Amino acid sequence: MPDTLLTPAQFLDHWQGHRRLTRRFIVAFPEKELFEFSVGGMRPFAQLATEIYKMAIPTLEGISTGQWNYDKTPMPATREELLRHWDDTTAAIETIFPQVPPGRFQEAMKAFGQWDSTGFGLLLYVIDNEIHHRAQASVYLRALGIEPPFFPDRS
Amino acid sequence: MPDTLLTPAQFLDHWQGHRRLTRRFIVAFPEKELFEFSVGGMRPFAQLATEIYKMAIPTLEGISTGQWNYDKTPMPATREELLRHWDDTTAAIETIFPQVPPGRFQEAMKAFGQWDSTGFGLLLYVIDNEIHHRAQASVYLRALGIEPPFFPDRS
Image (cartoon, rainbow over all chains, first blue to last red; front, side, top):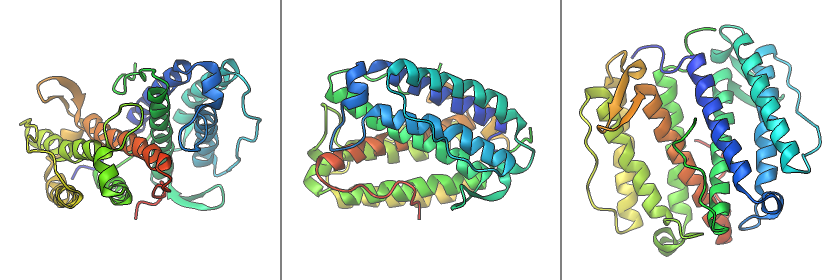
């Protein structure tokens, strides 16, 4: 087998494509339901979206520097504030990702003092978790009678 | 940036880890609800799980050979039959994946005569689609009062 399935630049493009799609989900909810609606006792999508954006930079900084620090800022209280954090994260990812030292993606590391993984494993987990929670939001939207944003569109 | 975020062998391991988790979701539903229950007019999880396993080999064969053929076998009528197809797919992936010619992952290709992508792009889509539909099933399970299988466990 060849040694590369995916390059770092291709991963970054794939990640930001998912984040563009998730942003459309944040916009698709009525604001009240974004913060209050759920199915089966789960968290409303505003809480899930906050978890998603808060994982990105601490994970990327940890992979890059070996310093693991959670984002402990309060949860946004409005959609506008949530989107501002979302867009700040988008820009920060673009800045920080290319600075990850060569080799860190393939390196074994313990994230946040407790998760044994690798650089690439942690990055895949961040995307997987985003897809997972956004898909839960797709059920919330259907239950509200709203057509979710189109899954294959990452533009 | 280094040229490799993820090797083919690492991708295969990641994929099969997701498939092990999805298999536990198939088992977690009561059989009747697996085939009938949904939220918001969506498809029951048996239909989604069938879509998931049916995408795997046709996509992998297409990437490997350039021949694109959908799996048009009928949908399984029981959980036992669904799991048999699931497990056959698991074994087939293990056989076919290492035979993909070097370079095909990075090659541009049109899948099934209509989807412009790359080898790696198609493989990421197959996993993303699996995570997406499995997460919808996690909402179905919560709505049924059943604790979904633990997301980070890929053993």
